[in-house]
Amino acid sequence: MKHTITVALLVLLIGCTTGAATAEEPIKIGGILMMSGKHATWGVNAERGASMAIADINAKGGVLGRPLKLIVEDNQGDNAKIAVTSLHKLNSEGVKFVLGPNWSPSGLSVAPVACEAGVVMISPSLGVAGFNEECDYIFNVWPHDDSLSTLVGKHAVSLGYTKIAVLGSQQVWEEAQARAVKEGVVAAGGDVLLEIAQEGERDFKAEATKIKAFGPDAVVLTSYSNIDIAAKRVRELGVEAPFFSVTLDQDLVSRAPKAFEGAVIATSFTPSAAHVAKYVAKYNEEPDIGGADTGYDAVMLLAEAMKATKSTDPAKVKDYLNGLETYDGVSGHLTFDGKGAVTKPPVFKVVKDGKIVPQ
Image (tube, rainbow, N blue to C red; front, side, top):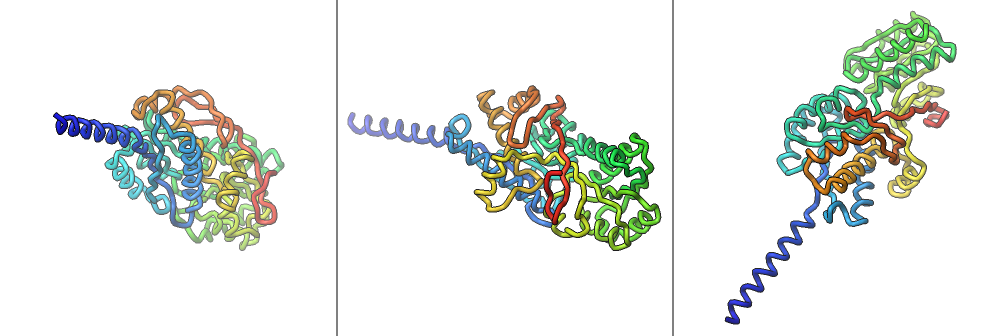
């Protein structure tokens, strides 16, 4: 009888221990981010922002009694194939919530896969509608950049620059922004030269030569991948017209500070002062564009959805997110468009002494 009671007690204890471990099993948040390559600052900032959010959430007990855990895959400079492979890997490991990707080519490739797998995906910095409108599992916490680009075109004309050259490339985001700038210039009554370079172009001599011959009052650069090279080339040919751009980051400006001096930038990068201070205290440098603030907000939104629905079921989480109208986060006041994207007021900044500062 004594032996039977001992065994029964042992079974009970094992059962309780197993139950506790299950209850405390981490909720995995995947990341498909640009952690290496020329534009790694985007992935690094997003990863840091997400990590800060997870630390804050876990310090308060986690979500539904479970801690969050971030698992990041590097898609190596916006490699679309690697992004898709990374999503398959994360999904096979039970990850149903993913932060990323950072840029459009990877995002447009991976979105259909996430939709089919029922994975909730939130990008901290992907600025095209084709991503979040793929299905109702896909979200952006970064406004679509074409509205910014159209605004830049109109803004340049309003400043008296009526003859404007636009330099983009065949990369999906860069071409979309170049054409949006043109629309803005034309709508405002300006004259425009549109130059679309090959994707990944690293010379820009032919395009810069045409820009010089056009004799522009201003030049708008959307050839983001190699925008520092494009800026240098245009300046080398003696074009002194002021530069305009969208979503330009400090890392790229630092690669060609003289060329970019005085450049006007329209951006949705508006982190709160408190977030910047907290980021600086942790990483000893200021956050750059790419997801420090929006990465933080993306994780916070996922956590809010799980708490509100008392579930980690991706279908319930995405339904909750699709029902949101507004959200106040460290990246600003976000208004949801009902299609997985957000809008918020943009700001203009300027490059002064090699630094991007408020205009």
